[in-house]
Every structure is written in C-alpha cells, then in structure tokens.
Length: 374
Image 1: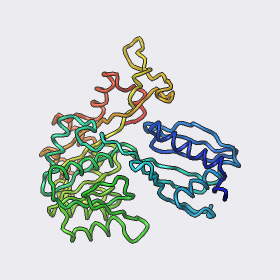
Image 2 (image 1 turned 30 degrees about the vertical axis):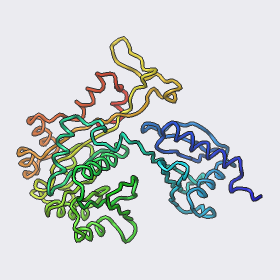
Image 3 (image 1 turned 30 degrees about the horizontal axis):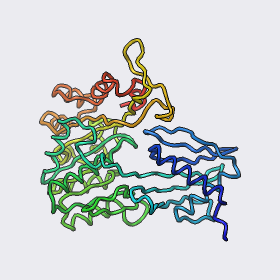
Image 4 (image 1 turned 135 degrees about the horizontal axis):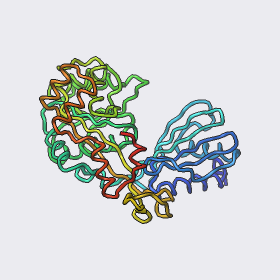
C-alpha cells in the first residue's frame, strides 16, 4: 500500500489541527516557520493565538500535506501558491490555502469559511434598528452608491453579502452581479465573478464590460484605485445601485479618499447615498468575565473561551447619509475636521459612542475598545 504524502503522522496531525480549528470557530490557521520550529496559530475572534509548536523537520512536511489538500504543486518551494480545500463530508465548510516562501521555509495560511445562518440575515448582524431601516431604504434606490468602510477583518464582506440576500428576498427578478477577489460566499441568484488584479480580468475591465450586461445591482469587492472609483461612480450615476468596500477609518475619510482619487466633488455628492463604517468587537466570555471594584467588566479566561477571556464578536457601526449639510461640506472640499463638525451639528452618532454603549452593558472591555482603535 502506497504511503500517503508527508507520512501518516503528518496527515493525522494536519487533519487534527484543521478539525480543531473548525470546532473552536477559528477563521484562519497560520503555519509560521521560525529559525528552529513552526508556530501553529488560530485566529479566534480576530486575534491570533499560538496553539502548537512543530519541530523543524516536521514543519515543512505539514506544509507539503497542505499543498496536497489544496491541489498545489508540491515540488515548488520557491513561489507563492493558492488553492481551495473542499471537504465533501462538510458541504457547509470551505477552506482556502495560501503558501508563501520565507527565509525559514514555507509559510502557510488556511482560511476557513463556515456557513453561519445568522450572518445571512441583515436583521441579525447587529446593526441598530435605525441603521437597518436606512439600509433597507437605500437598497431600493434606482441608482447610487453605498460604501462599507473599516479595516481588514471588520466584517465588510459579510455585510455586503447580507444586503445582497436581502435584495434577492425583497426584490426577486433583479439582475445582480458581484465582482470579487476572491469569491468568499456563494450566493444563489447572484452572478458572481472572480476578478484577478494581476491578470486580464481586473476590476476596471470587468466593471466597464458589465455595464453593457444590463445589471440593476452591482457589488464590487473593493474600490482600490482611481480607475475603479471613476467607473463605479459612473455606474451609480447612470441608474445602477452599486455597493462596495473602501479601506478607511471613518466615513469622513472615505469621502475625502474618493476626492483624492480624482472624483469631482459634485460627482461624490450625487452618487454616494450613504456610508457604513464598522468594526467587530470581541465579546467578553459570559462564563468567566469579572467585574472589578469600579464596575468595569474584565476578561479572565477559561476552557470555554480558549483562555482568551472572549467568546464571539459583536458588530459596532455608524451610518452616514448624504444630508444637505454634508453635501455642502464636500462641495467646498472641507477637510476631515470640518466635515466632523458638520456631522456633530447634525446629530450624527459616531462609532466611538456606539462602542461605549456596549462597554457600559458589560458586553466588551475597555482593552478591546482600545485594540480596535476607531
């Protein structure tokens, strides 16, 4: 009987690590080589935790096993590679593996996509009632652009996917196309296209061509450059409802970034319907959180929360709509500080204030608020 690639011990070890990661709800598994060994780390609730160390000789065999699972070229150790790992026994679980060469050997990261029905429903994500009502009104618009901002790992793609499902449910028959890099969640009823920024099918090429395909709703995984931004604004101004993400710390900064990309102020005010700025905060573990003498809740750590003091995450978000005052500020090319003053005068509820509400309720900790740094 032929021996499995990497040896039976490595096969069992890798399978056990991935099974354990799935069981505890990790979003990513890192296999990080060092000068002497390899660290295996789970990303739990957005934070990396070291769970195992492998000796050097076993480390690269583990990476070879991941290559086999991902359908990658096992004899090439000098190039980056990416592949999918599908488990027929778990149809709701999708995994993607990425290999990258380093001075200490190959580094691997496995991303786990686990179906969670709670994340499919816009009403269940954790937005305030007012934000949900505003979003539902916006998606019925005949044209315009909705932007979702925040750093990597803040749940932007999950929010967009939930909005798409809401549109499918409430407006059946609409032509919906999504351009993504990569496609993370398969949504029945949406035409999903994988773009390749390094290949021929880039965001600008795909988006410009799709405008001739008679779509009513367009979703872009991300607006990354001036060319994509220009075409996205053009689409929003010509009767298409367009959604996308933008890496930005605040809604004000997102508006200014569009201006910096060369979009004219009148185009920004005419195309942007609203901006959702969001973060994911770790929830204090209900099993072990501790109240100190001042009334604040602190993380402790127990077996239930993998000794982190936190278990699960909660969304905190702010919603900005294009008000007359905000339009005037953008047309005047106001800076972030002055736009902030306009929003404050109009009663905008900022992200920091929403986060303080969760702190007062004992849902999260001050240390966690400091970590996400609005």
